[in-house]
Image: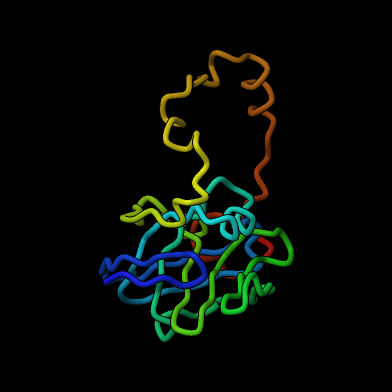
Length: 169
């Protein structure tokens, strides 16, 4: 089954379990129980802007299986049929809301490695270099002494990848 809404196509994928996720600062958290469907990467310009990235990884959920566990996102109407939800505190993109479904930002999940994309959409706006990113040279931190020293002093303020009893932690 494939359908298109606001430039983002759907491919059906069924996974039944519980998922959680949220924004970078922890102000907004969500829970999903049940089948996750339509893991995709959308290259449309609306998604590029909404995510501040070359593309948007999305996973659709049935609205009745989705709930906000802490806080609520601020919303922006990105088109005549879709609203985008994001954390008003830290700016993390969280949801794509259409009248018939909600798509969760896959990277906002606590376990994004369990949500591999099965479809690309919006290919008319796909940036030409996206397919060659994996071929770029990689620089391990050990090869860059300045980066290694910088990273040694970083104290993360990012919310952990699991629910916490309070926010901020």
